Image 1 (cartoon, helix red, strand yellow):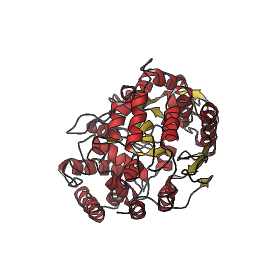
Image 2: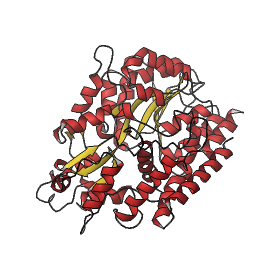
Image 3: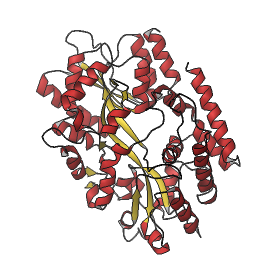
Image 4: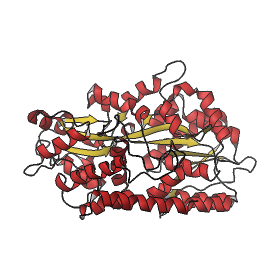
Length: 461
């Protein structure tokens, strides 16, 4: 398959939309031209941090850098046009797992260059699991940088008053949701909207906790197998009986919990700075919070790994990585990625948003916990800055810092990254969850989702 056709095929497996692009790419093959770096960290404050880090790299090495900040929804279109023109960048950063695997499936990554960077930094300095999720058999596809973890946050004051155990199993979650759904209080807030990626993330988190795999080791679709049917039943009951009425999305779930009208919420770790009152446009608004802004954070507990009815505890999370495309300035690209993954540059990169940038590289050969320890001290927040360790107890920070080792994700261990990207774009699981709110039986929802994924799988062959 030609590079143009490979790039076009990748676009079919990813979200395509309008978005922001800052900067423009250069011809990385031209002598004397800058090292072209694409980054999905495209928010203005994060672009400024990346520009400062790139300037530090140039000062140290003499290698000029041209930074291109790309929105995730625009990425596939940009790759297609750049690959067709022979103008891929030299480095790509902040890429989620599905994007890494889509690039690899279309033979656009220099796995040898990536492996060399990991070897120089020290394989043992990384989270073992992070390396596994970014590896295709014997090919290291990316250098895992950081990630966020999905959490079940709960009102530990309400749980204590009701004599309830922390909600870390299907059974305990269901029991708490039933016991605490009363008056204006709902048991749990979780995304259920058909067009919200958070719906699929919440479902996958509960699914991996129950041994439900979207695709099995032999490539078969498992969404209608018993563990997945049980997950559909479990989540359908929570959404229909113990959640706010109507389809919920990432914003409405947060608003409900922050208003003190939900006993539990499923959200990413990006919730933690907002819950701590560090972002003015998303402040806790419960009745007690008016006189005590720290009330909700102080009375919230965190569960990171959940156990279903038939599996060991597991945890959903997302990793972002650096990688080196084919055909660029290989040696200079390796030097840049290595620079961004060590010393103060790596700490500053994590400092963009510590609550959602948990380090995948734990330390260095001289100090195995160096970056984890530095991460705990980094100030989080937008309008107010405070380290998370000043807001949350030590057990919350321990759960966060160890989370990359426990990440379980659909498809990547089975080498099915292209299918995962296509499934993410088509959203069969969020649509099935939404259908259950409309009265579709859980078993039927599982079968419909499985059939749609099988259709997607066939289209990729």
